[in-house]
Structure formats: structure tokens, C-alpha cells
Length: 223
Image 1: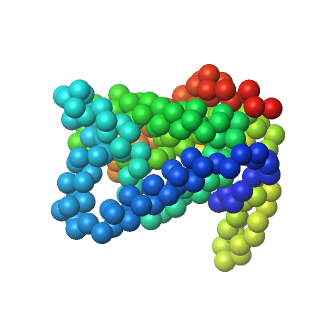
Image 2: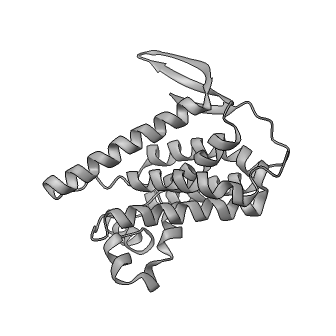
């Protein structure tokens, strides 16, 4: 299933949602222009590397924000930007532009700290907008619990569109990440390896902080 758009009308142009999508695309285009060695150095500077954050937080804390604009591949970028497009519009509309931007960045940074807390000694770069977008999904759950999303459904070679409750899409996102996060903990405990560097606990943390912080950012004030 792949979300296309929701049915809730928006009353303001979501400039910051557009801007965030545009900035993520520009940064990714820069990534693909780099050689492998240059890309590794780029991630080393701007992605969250838990061990470096642990040993030198005063210098590395900015990566909690810069890492939100990095992506590891086309699918990583596209899937994140589609979710931001579908769910971010209405959250920006309800919060207002500037509160929305602060909320987005705060959720992303706090999500990064959640992943860091789970793997403080890891040297695997943590990057992507997923934690911030998970925060958007958390806000969406409590603001639009009855909404339906037009969704692309793949059934083998057959593709169609259906309207499904947003709660189902977001619920699947949460369940997948909780299960994957628990498995990553088990793998780290039993085999001293990490699950491919996927920041599942950043996703879970971002969603939880979205639920908590959204009302404080005026989610219910624009009616």
C-alpha cells in the first residue's frame, strides 16, 4: 500500500511542507553526484554517528538536525517524501507554518536521540527524515482519527486505488517498526550486530514524541 492523498481540505498553502520536500530532494541530488569516498565523508560529517555523539556531544549535536535531510537511496527518499506530502499538509494547516517547522525538526532530533540511546557505541550512520515524519504521523493520528487516505494498492501485477482509514496505514507503520525494533535489539544482544543500520527506534521515538508534542504546538487551535 502506498498513500496518495487524504480527503481533508487545507486552508493555507503548506509552504514549509513543500520547502522540506524540495530541500530533501536537493540534498539527495548532491549525494548522488558524489563518489563513494566523498559520500562516506559527507555522511561522516552530517549524519548522526552514535559513538561520536556519545564522545563529543557538544560538537556533534547539530547532526541531529542535518541528518534529517540525508537519505540512503531513491526508495528511502521517495517513500519519506510521499508520506510527508500526504500527512504533512494538514498538520501544517492546523499548526501554522512556523510552529509546524519547529515541531518537525524537534521530532526528528528527539527521534535521533532515541536511536542514539539504544546504540550509543554504534558507528553506523543514522540518517533520514523518517523520525520527523513519524512525528507528523503521531500528530495526524490524534487530529484526524477518522480520515481516509486514497492509497495505491499492489496485487501482484494488478494495481488499483482504494480509500482506507489513515489509522490502518499508520497502525501498520507503527507495528512494523515496533517488531523490527525489538528484533534489532535481540540481534544486537545475541549476535553483536545491528540490523542493517535501519533506525527503527528513531521511527518509534519520533511517533511517540509526535503524539506528546503536537497538542503543545497548537494542533487543535485552528478549527
